[in-house]
Amino acid sequence: MKPAIPSPRLRRQAEAIHALGPRPLASLLAELAAGAPFEDRVEAYARLPAALIALYGGDRDRTELLALRGGRQ
Image: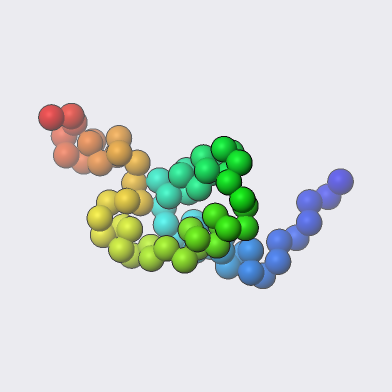
């Protein structure tokens, strides 16, 4: 069976979530794997402000942040 082509809305949401970075994307996938409602969570993540999340380092995994600081302290 061939996968369906996503709707324009879902494509826009995917682009917005991708722009958030790996950490928010991993969090979204974990929520979905735990049974969170797909449409609600995707919509909520797509509305998050990517620039603000990046400003506070929320777009990167914690291990990346530790590496930037020179390791655990």
